[in-house]
Length: 201
Image (cartoon, rainbow, N blue to C red):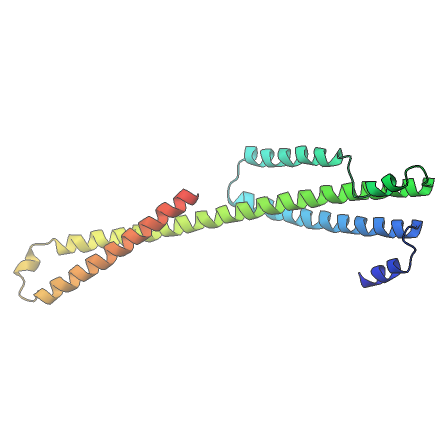
């Protein structure tokens, strides 16, 4: 980190040591990106398993990554091209070799960062889908419970002997009506939420 920066600042603007230090730093970043991408791949595999992602979905994702990776591998432009353009005829061989090393290191870093980003994005997408599925199932269960409560309530409320019972008075009927309205309101609200979640799904 800081030690490398301090060391680089004491080197001349263009030296073999300076370029080698830059290439080493790029390689370190590449290794870090590869490690993080590997961890993210393991996470994605678990999320896919939990969400029952099909093998064709998985295969399509990895094929897309492979196709995009090929484009990055064969990319001809580089941030180091400007070094060659500035002094194409006057550059010593060690500079040309160093630039080629730097270009290759940059290409590898671009490739590993690309893979990490795509795997990370896919993991987040799969997680969101999994969370949405859990919310849908939970809401569906709540709707079923309310529906069962309302059916049981209506069955009891529909018995004629209640009307003939002296203990049943108008305040009981008002309480029942309030309960009915409250449960139906909850039912409608949850049903609307379920419809919204299913559209997102």
